[in-house]
Image (cartoon, one colour):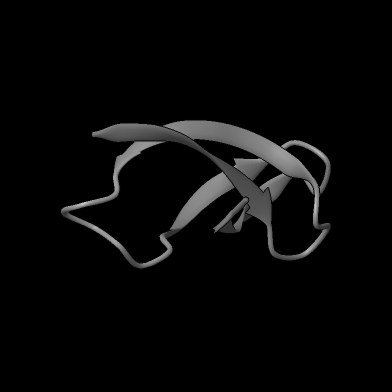
Length: 49
């Protein structure tokens, strides 16, 4: 069972990315280093609802 999740930048708080995640295998929230086009640098992006 895969669900679509949204990733938000930890610095500017904007929702930049969406991806899919298996909720049964990974129940905790994920964090990824992604490029933020608003800050123009790589920042940590966290899963939000």
